Amino acid sequence: MSFSFKSALKFIFSKKKKTLINFLSYTSIITLSIGAAAMVVILSVYNGLEETLKSIYNDFDPDIKVTKAEGLFFENKFIDKIDKINSVKGVSAIIENKVVIQNEEKEVVTYIKGVDNNFVNQNRIKKNLTEGDFVFQKNTLDYGVIGRGVKYSLGIKVNSDFQSIDVFALNQNINLNPNSLSKKLYNKKQLKVGGVFAIESSFDNNYIFTSLDFAQNLLNQNNNISAYEISLKNKSDSEETKEKIIKLLGKTFKVSTGLEQREGLYKILKSEKLVVYFVFFIVLLLCSINIFFLLIMMGVEKKKDIAVMFSLGVKKHQIRDMFILHGILTGIIGAIFGVTVGVLITWAQKTYGIIKIQMTSSILDAYPVILAGSDIIIITFMVIMVAALASFFPAIMSSSNKDFINTKNVFS
Image (cartoon, rainbow, N blue to C red; front, side, top):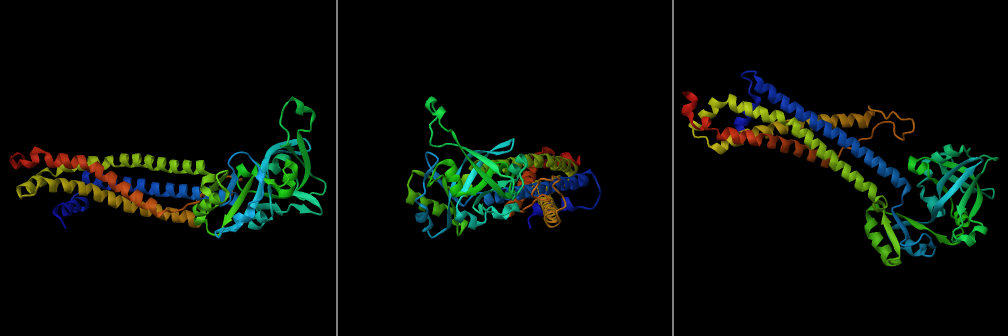
């Protein structure tokens, strides 16, 4: 063990007398511990909310989505070719477009999503049902599954024998011009409500699911669709499967993985996490002010001790290293205590759900938390680095002070 390290330990854990130096030393450790613990807890909550958000979108979004690069609809003739790719578990033909739904005098603008039997078999939305069944036809009548927000907006009852909704869609085969005003601009069909799903408000307020045939007839698209939604045997094969599909279909189609379908959202999440790190780095810098003043005052108080060290042959760089190590050790102790407290708080929240989400419409009872090992490493490194930075200037100043080097001035 080096001289600088031994001296730094002695100065930190000295019990000879209780002074302001001891108080500042403990305060430095406590403030860094609080900062580290706060970072662990807040980043864990952030990770939990991020993962919850991703799982919500995973319930709605496919592993891979194929759409037309230009235009909206295309002929449904590639489903068998895509299904033959080894990594593909299933392929669903989808048609989607905006419609107006009316129930008596109430109206909402929403998206209709016509899906085939393969989609139904994937159970992606079925597990999110809150009422009724994921059914599209019963006793020769057409049924739909609507979002909870659409249900509340229209005041609809599920599986009612007397209540149906009217679905209006713009006639896709008509080009709007003065001559088309005499033609029928929209199509209208009636639909009963067989079920209600609840995922997240942006979906619940804006989507209605029907059979592919019903939606195609409503939109006058016959055998046309707007997308293929593909589920994979292994989600980690998404990039490799994407390249195979592009090679198979050509550049006239756009192929998007799950991450690419919500690319803007995930970029925002990453940017927000970087902002969280930056803000807490500034907080830790403020917490490290105690270390700065601690080492400045320690240099003044230990003036005679340092002068004796110089007289005994201790080098200037050893004194400097002693102060820097003092700051680093303070940071290490603060990081250990802080991370430990943060991990315990996170564990308690995950196990017992202590902090509740006070919202009746929330899909979660308590704030979700996920402890990431990478966050622990980064937080520990940040605390130690900040402590080292705070001790650098006092170390240089103390080891360069002429009064320390010239022992005659000290003992005169």
